[in-house]
Length: 141
Image (cartoon, rainbow, N blue to C red; front, side, top):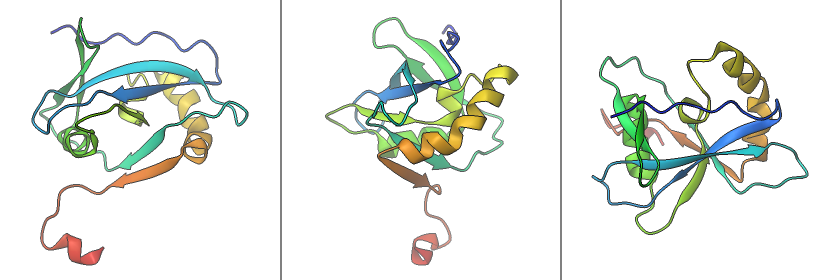
């Protein structure tokens, strides 16, 4: 499978949003990536995901594109989050740092990290993913 190649963002005020395509829990995770301009005057209907990055050595693929697919490798924790957050019957638009920022570009990472306050503030909601329940962790919530 070919690795996904990020296209440069048009301006410093652009971000990428992913559309998580519908599917069943165990289906491959398929997304589309689209740039938008991030301004307070241009409302976008997206959710932002806050989650724990893990240092797993066995990344899993997320597929970009419905027909001609390429892959982005992500951590197991993010894959599990997407399995749980994906809708079975409709797309879900989100901003997720590991997928929406070109992790191979230090320049893009720097400019996008500077926008993260706005990205979270302009989101319709922020979803926090702590991981799967373990050791009775649901009791803490």
